[in-house]
Image (cartoon, rainbow, N blue to C red; front, side, top):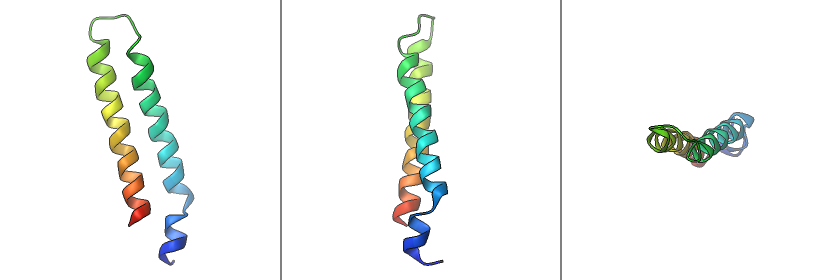
Length: 61
């Protein structure tokens, strides 16, 4: 498979969509009202960013 076909692979874009959903969960969790909501939201948001960066760098590779 050449690099253009690899970059357009569906799995990269599915991974980006999953990362966006994880990030949105982190953003919406900030508005929750429990003791450590902000800390948990930050951790989830960072996890979403890490997954998204992994997918983007896989596309660029």
